[in-house]
Amino acid sequence: MKTTLLTLALTITACTTNTKNTTTIAQPYLGQQPPGNTPIPFAPGMVSTEHYEYSGVFTPNMQEFYYIKQGGTHKDAKMLRYIYKNNQWQQETVSNYIGQPVISPNGKTMHLGNKYRERTPSGWSQVKQLKAPLSNQRIMRLSSAANGNYYFDTYHKDQPKFPIRYAEQVDGKHQTPKVLSTAINTGIKNFNHPFIAPNESYLLWDAVREEGNGSSDIYISFKQPDGTWGNAINLGDKINTKAWEASASVTPDGKYLFFSRNMGSDNYENVDIFWVDAQVIEGLRTKMP
Figure 1 (cartoon, rainbow, N blue to C red):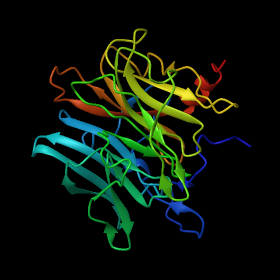
Figure 2 (cartoon, one colour; figure 1 turned 90 degrees about the vertical axis):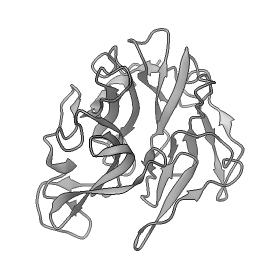
Figure 3 (cartoon, rainbow, N blue to C red; figure 1 turned 30 degrees about the vertical axis):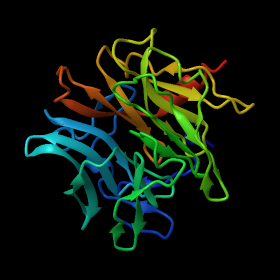
Figure 4 (tube, helix red, strand yellow; figure 1 turned 60 degrees about the vertical axis):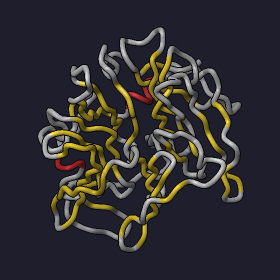
């Protein structure tokens, strides 16, 4: 049986018959034709436009898609979402920009840097602040594993070599953050936007490194049998171009890799969300030492 990339897999089918254990969406992925091994813009005209669209993520049931947008009718950055209801995808404005949304593997928490929202019967809660020892961390993006461990960056524009850290959860409480190894925190600057696989088998992040393709590139490290992190592997020139690429994640069903790319503007006014078949990760796994 083919092994999926993530431990939490959902069955998404292009039909309208509901069964007890199957999530069925008539038009999955906002009705878009899935990509192959070459990245393409996600939902052109709907999500990816001539403006700034960034950090797109689905909820585990694949019925909500969240992203950040600025430009056009949104002078200030907003969090938008597409939600599947009444058999169609509908766009809504969720809030002003608070932080980069990352949904926990169980779908109960929306991480927003050092803040978060919890899922309630009526929707998302009000914004809450992480508790100590994480409350005073300058977090741009935080991603959680299925066991509750946190992985996050600590970027500051005046200190671009701040490392990526993790905080283990023990008995429901997060421990003092620790710096990840030099396999990850090595390069020129900007060790940012980590995304941890739900089972902690790999970590995605972006950085400016000496061997990179130009600006920020996306890298992956695989967890080794002894629990250490393997050397960083560049995702390759189909994903990493001379432009700025960042903020990668994998859809909860394990099928597609999403990331953001600057489309040429010096001031990042035109950033698009791209997607590609997540088998690129399995291809890189074979490069493990």
